[in-house]
Length: 324
Image (cartoon, rainbow, N blue to C red; front, side, top):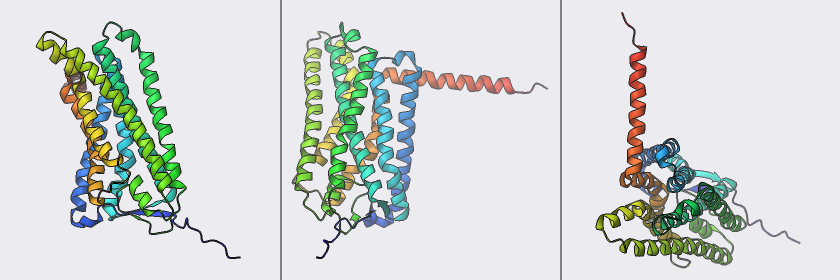
């Protein structure tokens, strides 16, 4: 009796990246490299400043430190491979490496959803329950909520990567994208993807809806509480404490929902790439910029840290000078 053909013949995938615009490869490489360096540097600065400045030792800034750490991991999952692809005009990745990238991409993306929801709850307690806030959002509680976000994100990443890894891939192996994303991988499979597509859609809509509605309810209560403040200056001061988070949430959910909460709609590969560049390359840079520019405490802490470093440098230079 003849043996059935081996459907899982694909052992590696070829990421096409931006091969359709070869004349722009060098420029794109320079832009993405600059953005990546700024993203890493910006988030490292936020982590260092929050860790060192006593003024920023509060739950809100503790969450911000976790968010910055997450952004470094998130963008580092995608951008280095993107840069390598731009240099070579395409990039081959093994099947296992592709599944690993897919897992960490979903892991960090889901973790960001959970973490932003926890930050919204923190802002709700700070504004609507100020007297109980130190007890309800103690450092121990903050640490547990942040850890829960990471753990739930790690668990969320298993189902999509497991279901994609069990699909049959018998060729072609060219992914018209710059990383191993869910839609292009399912399009390449030579087996039925209905179950995988439905399961991933249900998981995506569940995670996004839970986090989104938790965030939405928090801000509805926050706005209701702020509107009851009699003075305009008091209302502005209260809203300024959550303005940065609201801006980050709007950018993040806008791109993620448009990309993944659409089981039957199909975007063109080029539109998908542009959308993906925004939330994998641009958004991780925007977060530290938004929090730094809109938050006076962070700006003041950065100014003090820079002044201290400059002062130490000047003292060191004067101390090392030779008197003749």
